[in-house]
Amino acid sequence: MIKLITTLLLSTLLIGGGNDITGFSVGDKALDFNLKSVDGSMVSMAANKDNKGYIIIFTCNTCPYSVAYEDRIIDLHKKYAAKGFPVIAINPNDPIVQPDDSFEKMQERAKEKNFPFPYVLDETQEITLAYGATNTPHVYIVEKVKADYIIRYIGAIDNNTRDASAATKKYAETAIDAILGGQNIETTSTKAIGCTIKWSAASKAKRAEG
Image (cartoon, rainbow, N blue to C red; front, top):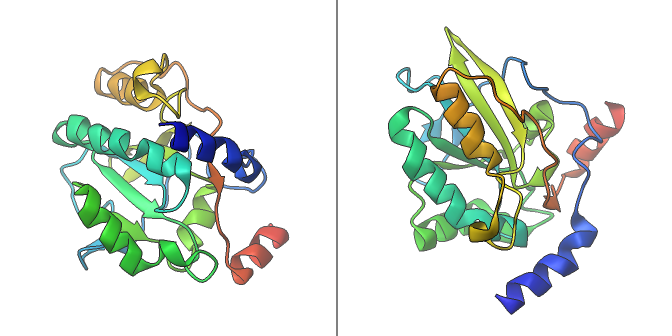
């Protein structure tokens, strides 16, 4: 635990504000994707027409914030997948910039942690750019409305990175519970705290243009 806290403190230099590039806002129609998962399958939201929505989380192997949230991401999937809101974890990092976020390393991590959800690589970073994700982890909760997927929440999983048991606001869970209960979501966006995404040169150029 001491090692984790120290690593998190050192990583504060990598924290982004979450608002420096354009992307989707709450209420927007989310872009579907077709990305390769660690098991070799191609994953999209439209593939499972019975789901009520998805918990899309931009995360990775290497960021200590992402690592700190791995068990909570697993718990979110176990709690909500059966209710129609499974997790899809998207690794947005360029493996050339961060080799430990390569597809092979993703496969190793998924096996080590026994991820029960798809863990996919956004190889071109086009999906990450479209959504406007800036940090790992960065959560987008989408609800299926007819044939569309509407973004209902963007931000952090909860308000305590270091200690899940000490979190007093479980933003992601509260948002999903509100959707399932037909209620308004009280907090629809929060600041995503984590490591900045490792962009390729091409993605950096696109961000500069945007």
